[in-house]
Length: 173
Image (cartoon, rainbow, N blue to C red):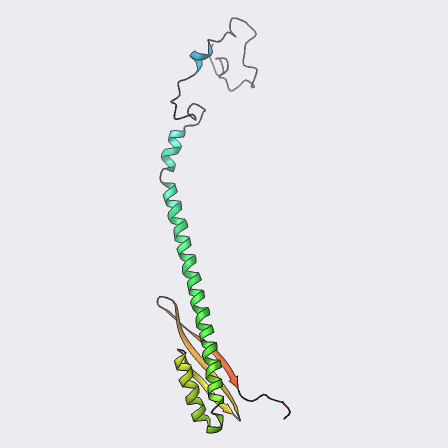
């Protein structure tokens, strides 16, 4: 019994199920208990042809790296979401400041552009905005405001909004 596959049941050149010899003396197998290898009770995978101990050494600590990578991705997504949220809040703040400033300034339109724009600037400043443009066209006040925003540390942006207030155009008395 020499060569590849000479031991019954251990050859790779024989198809499955055809590993016994027709000779009854050769086909005799020792009792099953003596063939079975002893496997530690905690490691059921041992002896199945794959070296699990080698794989465990290669992958040791990879769960920690995956956890750190997922944590980093979550932190970056959270920073991005908070930056978008801060920009949206600043945009809404600029719209409110422009609307309220234009309404307050239009109430003083009869006093002239200086008085109307001064009143609009006061209301816009109360809403954390500054006046970018202010013009009076008849009784219509057009107001542009800017609200500074810092969505991420070191990244400064400006949210802008415009509003118009005055009497309704084309309304019949």
